[in-house]
Image (cartoon, rainbow, N blue to C red; front, side, top):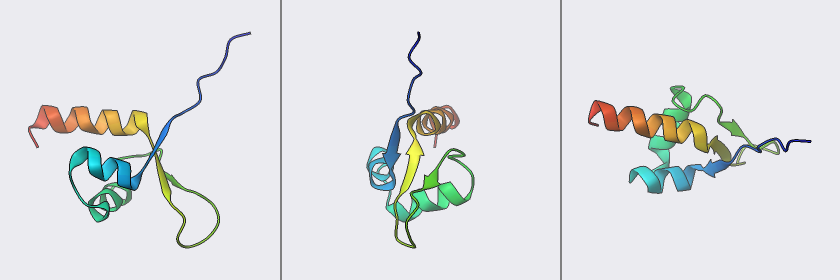
Length: 68
């Protein structure tokens, strides 16, 4: 039996620190569809967003290639 790889997630704060931006920028990127796998943890209005590492790596690569 092969083990399935569990997706790894980052919080908005972790992503903000990676890109040296504020959490509002990360939220804007989520709303704009930059992290298509991002989702809000169920439980209420102030629950955290989780963002797949794969989405973050893809976005970082795109930004690096575009020079932003």
